[in-house]
Amino acid sequence: MSLILRFEQLLLFSLCLTLVPFESNADLSLIFGNMTLFNVNFKSPAWLGRSIPVSNNVRIDSDVDPNILEDSHLNTYGLIKKYGYPAENYTVVTDDGYKLTLHRIARPGATPVLLVHGLLDSSATWVMMGPGKALGYLLYEQGYDVWMANVRGNTYSRGHIKYTHNHAKYWDFTFHEMGVHDIPSSIDFILNKTGFPQLHYVGHSQGTVVFWIMGSERPEYMKKIIYMQALAPVAYLQHCKSPVVNFLAEVHSSVSFILKLIGVHEFLPQNEFIVMFNQLICDETTITKEICSNVIFLTTGFDKSQLNETMLPVVVGHAPAGASTKQMQHFGQLRRSGAFRQFDYGWLRNHWRYNSITPPEYKLENVQAKVALYYGENDWLAQPSDVEALSLHLPNVVSQHLVNYPKFNHLDFIWGVDARELLWDRMLRNMKSIDREQLGDNLTA
Image (cartoon, rainbow, N blue to C red):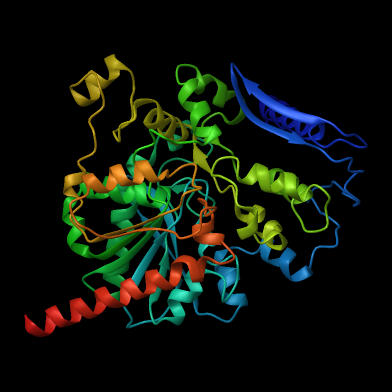
């Protein structure tokens, strides 16, 4: 291990220790310029009431339910298999050389549905809450063949035919490349494997962004989509309330330097130490569980009533799952510009790359697939006014639904305690309705 890497780890470890007071009652604020990113009050925890032996393999002793603790360490395949569902995983190689993992809850012969996760997330998000509480299992039980994507750079998709994930060139991507390469390659693999000509698509957050980009840049793939259901859809960020995204927008000129100090080319890397620290403060027994909730929701909004806090160790065992610094910069650029457009390299490089001093906007008029938009009032990333602006640019929106619960936030779409009653049942009805329409069209064709 290099001296630089050792120094970075020591610095990060020291920083984490300063965030866990021993016996105090103090406020912690992070202020950048005139922006307060967060302000948290610590409530006199002792050393969190646990022993933390640090050795070659970090081990955390606590009173967490052993079943939940096990789920926090199982990968997506292991979670599916543990609960008695047919688990499969496949490797997809994109045309630009990235190796992606597809997970499947297999129902051969049934209509395939592709689930695409959001920012800093992975396929685990669709199953981690367990049977009866996770959308992936629910779709399987409704008769679908469930496939779950993992985009480049996350925990399950860190391979490349030429580069390792320690190579700077590996991380030279944003969500643009995911929409142009990752999602089309995943769709082709699924359709070739199942023999179906089309599939259903469900995207959350960034999983919607990459769909719009695929439609814009590779519109031929719209014919392969039965129905696109967008959960917390993101494109325009003009009214975004996320402190993280707004921070990236405000410091756009120097953000590359700032991010390189903490992650070089990868933003929030998924490693054993980060998982250890998250689980240290995020389980049901610790006095700081409310602080943990706030940190997790810092990017997306707050709705503690829909958060199953018992499952926090599972959540932080799987997220954050990795992203590139360039990817995070791109979100900041969308916020700053108010437009939905390609990455901004600066006027000189833009001219060389795009033959224009400004990045080209994505062509949303090319997104010809049937689309349903689901959004919430308390979503910091997908603000209702921005979703409504998006709907005006999409040519084939067949359903648009504001969740009938004022506190519904960005993560409630996938982890909410009442997500099924508030949203998923409606989604399933819409899917079945579209399936019946398609069957009728095929019979009369």
